[in-house]
Every structure is written in C-alpha cells, then in structure tokens.
Length: 235
Image (cartoon, rainbow, N blue to C red; front, side, top):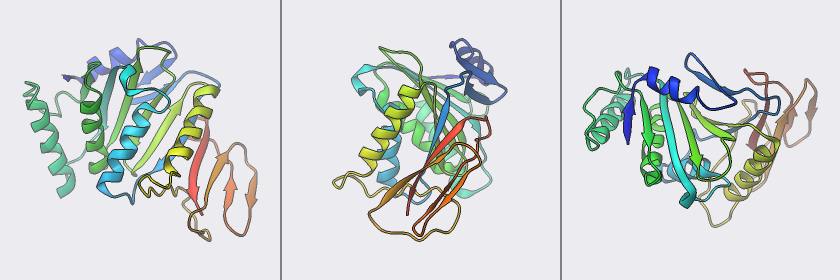
C-alpha cells in the first residue's frame, strides 16, 4: 500500500480514459453509464466484509487483480465510531511505513498482490460512514466500473457499459440470493412497502413513470449525474 495526497490521487485518476474527476467526484463520461445501489445499513460485520469483497471484484477473478485506488473524500471524526476508524486506518498505514495523518494523505494505492489488503481498507469507510471511491483495475479488460461508498451506508456501483451493468446486476442478484450465503438484506427504497420474506425484486429508475402493486412499487428518476439508477429491494 502506498498513501498519496488528494492532488496526487486526482491527477492519477484523471489519466484514465472516460473517467472524469471533478473536485472530489468521479463519474464516467459515457452515455451508457449507469448506477446500481446496494444498501448495507443493517448488515452484520461479517456480512459487510462479504459484500465489500463481492463488489470489489464482481465479474473478475481475484487472481486477475492488477491494482486499486481508494480515495477517502469525506471523513469526519465527530463521533466515537468515526474516531476509532480514523485511528485504526492510521495504525494500518503505519504498518506500511506511512506516518502521515489521514488528513494529509487521503489516497491509497494497492499493488497486484494486495487485493485482500485493499478490502481491509475499503471496509473502514463503510464502518465510519464516510464517502470513499474504490477503483479496481484488472490484468485484462478496461476500467468499466468503480465503487462509491456514500455516507448514508450505500454502495453506488458505477458502470461504464451496458455489458458491465448487466453482468453486475446478475452477479449481485445471484450472490446475494444464495441460500448458503450470508443473509444480506438489500432494501433500498425509502418508502413503506408490504414486505414478503425470501422475495427480492429489482426496481429500475428510467423515466418519470410510476408503477405500483400490493407488494411493492417502482418509479423512475435519474440519479445526481443524470444516469439511470437500478436499485435492489426486498419486499
């Protein structure tokens, strides 16, 4: 792991074709870019780790990991949990010989042999309720997705192509619905719905249409980047 400043992280990410870095925000400069939201607000600790590892590689094999960037863009230490995470990250960084404060070097680069280490760092902003970008790269293919951890305890999986969007949805549905896997809840709609256990539905946001039923509802809105948003929900 190598820690870098915000300026160094921004300059590195701006080199990637099709990836726009504006202030402390990343997005794909593509008409096919879409977003998938996954809620982890109510997960147990072991489920957080399972989900973090899943979204970090999606359709890629961990053995094909080439490198990753983790950029913590919004951090606070005004509550007890965040203060503990802040100190934990600094101690983890010291194990790599990095003695600068997280405030001075908010970016992290991970080598090809540090996939597990990158996940251990990715989990930290999930615990603290911070904003962070995780941008993995692989030994084949192009940069076709990255992950944003937002401070409302959601993953925003940003995909660049239709192919990656479809693959990510399929993988998430299959893995999160596995009967032998962790009982991960993926409730995202911020409205009251009649919930049925063991049933999962996808709610896709495309236009302004509203559709409803006795067991759930779906309506379409663009996300803040004007891109389509696909939300996963248990009803």
